[in-house]
Image (cartoon, rainbow, N blue to C red; front, top):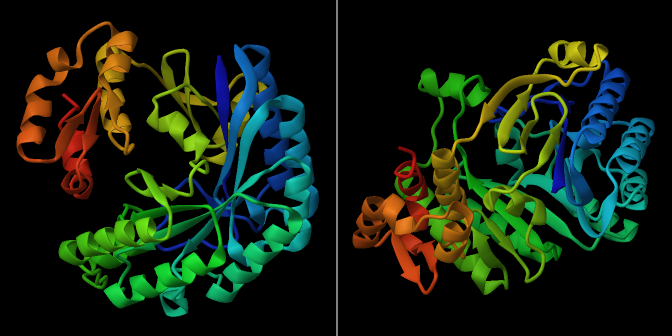
Length: 377
């Protein structure tokens, strides 16, 4: 029974220089129409699917909070009608600190949203401008205060490090500032230069100056150290939380569990199939006019692929991969499938076996991608 759903709002008032997610400029877009089609996709899916009340819903983008209050109310009403919530649930909304009024926050809270994920990235205003963000540090303080006033008690902050011209001192200052905000969760990722972004074009012209691998590794070590000092447990390579405030929705992905994805460009994992929707709005809407789902690609995941995914997703978690659960799921011993990879990484001190669990070491976290790729045969 599927109990997790992701919903995609692709509209942005401004495009950040590093972003390669499916998004379009808000101005002049058929936002109201898109919300109607999104509702229709949910209706068709729910009428033909096996699901239980939802334990996690995550609304991402784009910038979901770029919607005006009337549009937000329409969207939230649609979710309330189509996706019944479980008694205990996590309902996350991604938010941009620059467009979060108290009225919007209260609306979200009154409709059952109980977790906010704020795209902060850095508290250095010069760096924010350099990476194409339109908010400034003061907007973050105001947003967090307004969210608390509206009733929110579970907030996450997204940070990016290894930004162009960013120094260790800059990153240290961002961490020090962020810990003063009294939030419950952090996601922190190193900058990845993706194709079709402003940064990618600058890099190709030799005009993008990032700190380099050694500084990036030092920033990650500083991140882990400071999070621990401030009472945040690292439960995944890039995620840290106060006890009990782990992202339940993201754990759905890392536990390799099924979930629905709704909206343009959204991905799903349903009944053993990984599916992706059309990204362009027109192509997303056309099948729904014929009462068909807007699926662009559908792939049945083989047992071999499931086992590989179990490893490279599960090893992202600090608790790692349970050998017993692997055997129960796939009816084969993990050592029979991945002996060479596991022993090789153990010899290099990138993996360790603790009781029933196979986990990344601290060094393994620094070289995570190298470890993950080895399990894809």
